[in-house]
Length: 154
Image (cartoon, rainbow, N blue to C red):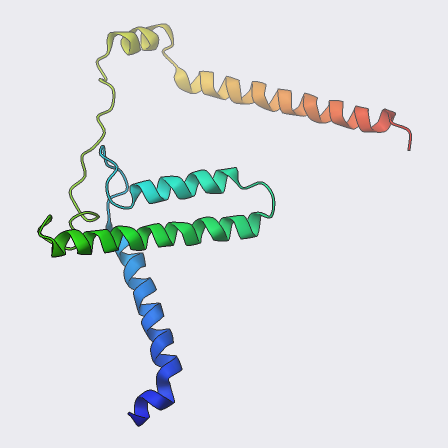
């Protein structure tokens, strides 16, 4: 009992760090893509949307998004434990560690794609040309902004 009285803060802190590490490892080893969007995937998508929508006070907004995501991950783990306890799944981790169903990509032998490749044989050159045009547009915008600030009286 004397040990607990002396080291209670270290024990609680160590337990919290251990739990955070376990959650981190579970999220790390779980699938990131699934056709049915099971496991931690919906939590991650919600977090990504929140991060993209952060405009004002970005640090607090980002921290809130990460904390909300962590709470969502904890709920997914808790749901797995509850489903396992009620006999709805064979293991407590079955709802977030599973073999993912891969989203099928469009057929590579698609006739429309074959026609596009026939009409545009060198996509790399097209992309480089588009990149150059984009850079030219950005340079023109910068010059227009500089001219606009020079014309204004101060």
